[in-house]
Amino acid sequence: AQSVSQHNHHVILSEAASLELGCNYSYGGTVNLFWYVQYPGQHLQLLLKYFSGDPLVKGIKGFEAEFIKSKFSFNLRKPSVQWSDTAEYFCAVKGSNYKLTFGKGTLLTVNP
Amino acid sequence: DGGITQSPKYLFRKEGQNVTLSCEQNLNHDAMYWYRQDPGQGLRLIYYSQIVNDFQKGDIAEGYSVSREKKESFPLTVTSAQKNPTAFYLCASSSSGGRNEQFFGPGTRLTVL
Image 1 (spheres, each protein chain N blue to C red):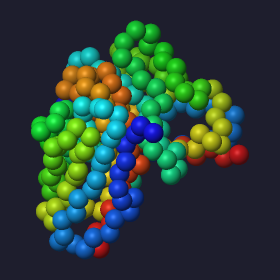
Image 2: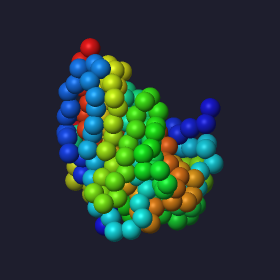
Image 3: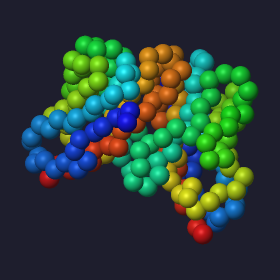
């Protein structure tokens, strides 16, 4: 069975600080990896996804993530956060059974 | 506008009553999903359907039931057998195939009193 672990439950940053949210997954085969974001009061939406090829994936709003196969990791990064990035972030993995398994989420609070 | 609608946004029920949550999509997606979101627990898969008239149990199916009679609709019934039904319920859909992202609806917050 596949599983996802997000290291931080709540991260608090000041504007312009750099962000890295950890995500590790457990699955023995080929995976597709995703980061979703849930802004306050809004739908869950896709930030970025990795299927194959270049392990450095760029998403919307300046976010990027790096797939490191040897570490089973897919960490999310942003060089400079803004107050509007305050949201809950979810890492997810999809294996060959097409089921999407989510981590428990990381709440990011950015102080102005 | 293409998208996923869930109704109602807030739902209150008395303990022991069954309740059905609506999910409709006009994205022409084959696959539909139901998740439950609890604080600090992330999203957990309840049921999913890859095609009309077929569905499979997810990780936490006990106390829930679904039907998929139409491509655009995937209602979820929370039965009285569900021991802790108060939660935020999210419906999603995707095109068939493993590489397709899931699109999510706005959710229904169910409170059982």
